[in-house]
Amino acid sequence: MDRIRIEGGRALCGSVYIQGSKNAALPVMAAAVLHRGVTVLKNCPRITDVCDMERILQRLGAKSSWEGHTLTLDCRNIEGTCVPMEYGSRMRSSVILMGSLLGRMGEVTVPYPGGCTIGRRPVDLHLKAFGQMGVHVEERQGMLYASGSKIRPAEYLFPFRSVGATENAILAAAAGDGETVLKNCAIEPEIVHLCRFMDKMGIQIKGKGTDCLIIKGGTELKDTVFDIPPDRIAAGTYLFAGAITRGQVILADAPEEELDSILQVYKKMGGQYYWNSGKLVTDSRHVQYPVSYVETASYPGFPTDMQSVLMSVLTTVKGDSVIREQIFEERFKIVSLLNRMGARILVDGRDALIHGTETLKGQHVFAEELRGGAALVLAGLAAKGVTVIDNPHFIRRGYENFCENLAALGGNITVDK
Image (cartoon, rainbow, N blue to C red; front, side, top):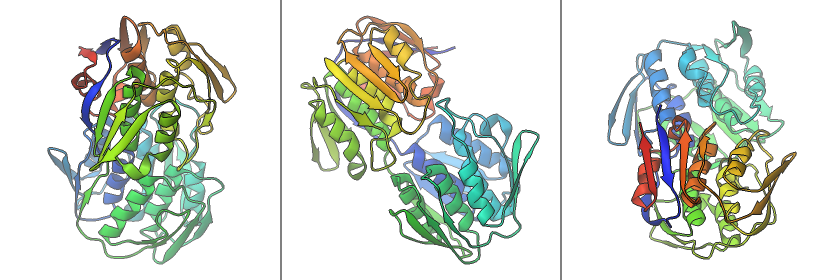
């Protein structure tokens, strides 16, 4: 079993290139299934989740190849309709194949979504939207089976915003013969990127970037070349890695328009930054102020995927900070591990009360999910002594060459196998 070993206490300095977006690449790969042809994805991150999605598509009948960070998907011969249990059960994003396989094949069988253990993430919103489009869904031997020989146009109001349900509904609607109207959609950048990709593929979508989308389905699709945009969560993680070590880090190709809420919190802590020709130049030497209150929210609010790494940073800032988790009820699992490292964090319902101590100490800990694992790495970079982190496979689900990039910035970090 491999593990990460970190000897903390070094300020990170230098430049890091921001990888392609995990949360944009996966739904775009699912959308490629709708087209009986070839899709080329540039700047695609070579991370575990993307590779697992690639293997699922291969099992369904697709052919794929890599050249650097360019992934080519040939979906002409897809005939399968069942997402394999060994991939689907460990990766939540596999559920978005429901919409595209329904649209192409008229039926689909998927495992209940897996992935990170950060709380209940039901798929009822996905299924309700499918129901409005004439899809029948039932449970068969622990799997979800959906069928609909013809997707019908519909008008559907999501009871609350859900990124995955919005993506799935868009994918299914693209195969319908007519216009589908989706209201109260999530407006995360990844949904905008998915709509942009589908536009290039030949599907007309109005309202991109708003909470009301109009999808005109039944159009002829075409081969597409698409650039996966940079990953806003990876950018935020490297930003906070600089913050927790009080370093000076340059983020190359960071998504400027998508980082506002993260940079607002960074600035409150005393971080300084400016943009220069597509690069985010940061200076964290004066990070020293607690954040009295921040809550996670759907975009454009502070992202839940950044909550754990922010918590790590705030443990090293003197004074009291409060984080309220509004999205996933179990995203405070990391608290006991940070407290083992010397942090002083008290959880009260959805609130984490953080009393910064500046005295994190290296410990043997373990990752339980993707973002919490990254947060432990950041804590180890700031801690006195040696930190050992088991289960780094969780981190590889979303970060490409994470430890290597941090080492290139000056961190004393290695992966022992």
